Length: 423
Length: 85
Image 1 (tube, one colour):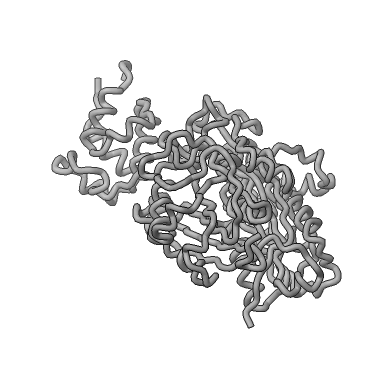
Image 2 (cartoon, one colour):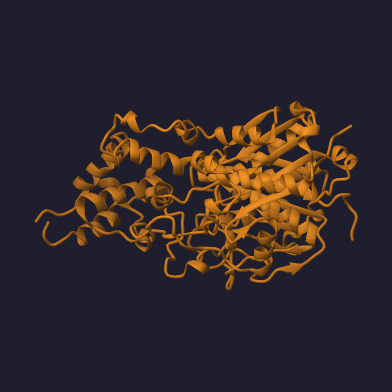
């Protein structure tokens, strides 16, 4: 008998959305969290904006040791995990620890900490043979991304499979997909899964400057992330995390857990084409969508809302529109599509999980978040992108997609549980 | 005053591509679209970054739409060379 995977807990650390409730409030409001970068002086960079999570580590529940030891992305993952566990009400210490696993998506790992540590050890780049007298015992965690999975395993007591999934901008969706696979195949009953990234640092911002992927609309940061708009000019980099409690459905029902949604299907493709380029027909993303729907045993017509990748680059938004039409046919024209990157920016390996959280909350509360800053759609982007204002809508099934540099294309399908029931 | 010609362009391309593809960049190729030469956007950006660094010529984002061939690129850079070069 096939196993079904339920989302029973959600924790979010998002720009202008610290915590699940604040995150949802932001999405429904249509306000944006994109600002001029505050964590360093961005003056010399081409894109000087980011969506930063507005909390100070010191004001959070992190202990002084955690503050010292953990990269900011790890901090966001830990805080999100605490929230999702509390939300789910699951008592992990009553379960077989070998049946609990961890799956964390990240694109850039502990880059921010590594950059900071390297500056110290190399005396601001002067010493190739770094000076060992300034070594920190926590340096390992900064440059080995698997440390994020280890941290979540240690804090939850999970002794099942623990992994970091790193597939660029689809890391967050793929980490949840991987977690789902482990539950479906029977290896575990519970997964703590999601994604995190804190890439707002000089080297990461420079990386995207070099390939002109980020918006240079520095004089208007609040409106710079404008997916599907005719005047879009790149994405706004962001930080954030979302962690979910995934449970086998019968396991969740047995303890009376609240189920936000079930994850019906997930699929991942690579376009085997180019580091940043996308084929205009969107075929590989369409394949991922079709495969995810097939796994969910759903027709395209079942989709009530599409949560887009919608990064706001010229290329992505056209590619994605083509993919939706190819995979969903005429139904693409009848289905609301929106991008929350318009509000919370693009947090690389985290955003896929943050978007899954948004989809689960959309099902829970019966509303579609808008695409902010969409005043004049690109003529080549001619679907219903829910401009500016959230829209109440009963959602039975939601599709979310991701597209990552390197050609990664992913799709994930969530449905209200029990499926097919309309409130 | 020295200008920016195919010779200088080839040197920059050799530095970016480590010689391999620059060999095909002769006079007959100057009006060939970069895409047809096998230079994708990332390669063109890298060439532009080196040129900006070595020749102190600014190439703004909006210029790239028109810089589709070696000839166009060379002409743009040559016209923008600092007067004291």
